[in-house]
Every structure is written in structure tokens, then in C-alpha cells.
Length: 288
Image (cartoon, rainbow, N blue to C red; front, side, top):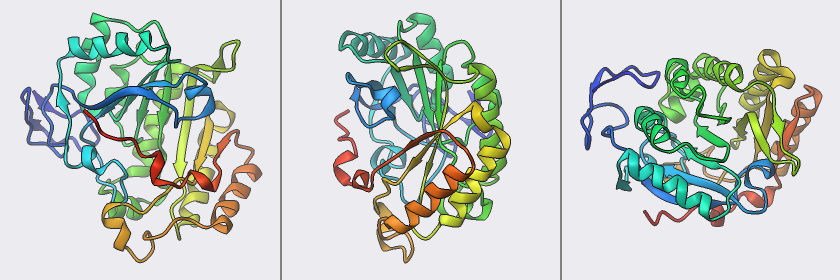
């Protein structure tokens, strides 16, 4: 295929097992882990876990990525759409609350094919960086029930420096707009588990509270009560970020409280974390 799935529009040649685009991946999904996951928001993980499928490769290159082994080094196992459909069945048999596709932007055609083979009986969660093409998201319309995007940056220069993602702000806002169009406002079942809607995540970075507050202001202006916001403090220095003068530490309580105060003052609804979540133990093991 000639690939323009992500906002980079690489026009890259991709065959089943390799590709010349930014993500470096072929068209067949590469998967690093398939297992119940308990690290999502309460209305996603619940008591039985979210049925997570972690895909390898990424359309961004975040300096601080905690999933570096799979996002940048592309470690994982190549599977077919039929095998991916079997993953959904296996997860369902383990009693999870939903099927959670983590970082699948560069494999969307194969994901759609897997849904045509087997449509999960549970809500489908699409978990992504926010650096996503609305046109690609339109391919998922009718298949995805819950979107879980990041909104990392209100500052495009910061997005380029830390994540090699040009025009991140407007790209991510357009993507979230498409997600909200598809799902509508949040809906829940009788147990309080989310069945439809959008949760936008924002990770607070050390020494970058101004970016965080601007990002929350963007979300409040554009979407208001139509979305939930998950404000995260789980940042742990990882990879190249360990040696960065600003990113080489965890965030402080004062930094997080400052951003939380902005969240509340803007009237945004959603979730916050305890600082104890900034722990390497929360990073999954990639058992492929």
C-alpha cells in the first residue's frame, strides 16, 4: 500500500512485513502484549480489567516514551487480522470489561478487517496519541465505542521538540472533534462502566505546567462538558529523557496541584491521579 494513514502523510510504500514510512511498520499488525490491563481510568478498567491489545510502532517519537521498546524499536509479534480477531475472543473469555486497542493508528485497515471477521461483544476502546488523522478515524466509525486519546501539547514547538510531531495542537483537536462526532457524550452501564464517549488524557510533564494549563484551556473552549478529561501525573523519566535537564525528574506535588486547580477552575469533569502512580511498576512487561 501507499500509506497516508497518519497526519505525516508519508506517501510511504508498505508491504505486509515492512514499510518505508515514519512508523517503519508493514501493514500486518505487530502486537507486543494481549492481556487484561488495570491501569486505565476506573470506568474503563473496572474490577476485571480492560482487554488491552498493545500494538508496536508509533506515529510519534516522544523523548520520554515509557513504551520505547515497542513504540520505537518495533519489538513484537506479527499477526494476521484473523489472529487479531482471535485475540478479542481470548480476552472476552477472560471476563474483561472491554476490548482496548492501544496505539493502532498505523494498522487501522487491518483492525477494520479484524472487526469484519469478529465483532467483539464488548465495547471497543481506541487508545491513541491524539496525533491522528480524522480521515483515518472515519474508517473506525461504527466499530469503536470509546475513544481514549491524548492531548499532549498546546505548544506546537514543544510537540516538535519532544515528540517530533509537527502541527500537533490543531491535528489533535480535529481528531478529538471527529471522535466526539462518532460517539456523542459519555454513557455508562448500570455498574458505572463506560459504554460510549471520549476521555481525553493529558500527562503533566515536569517544568511544563504552562503547556498543561494551555492544553486544558483548549479542551474547555472546544469541547466543554462533551468530553471527560483524565489529568495524569504518572510521568517517570525514561529513555533519553533521563538525561534531559527538565525531563529527568518526576513532577512535584506543587506542579500537579497547580494544573489540577486549572482543571477545576475551567469546570472540566473527569479524573485525576495520586502522585504514587509515578512508578515504574505500572509500565507493562512486553511478553509478546
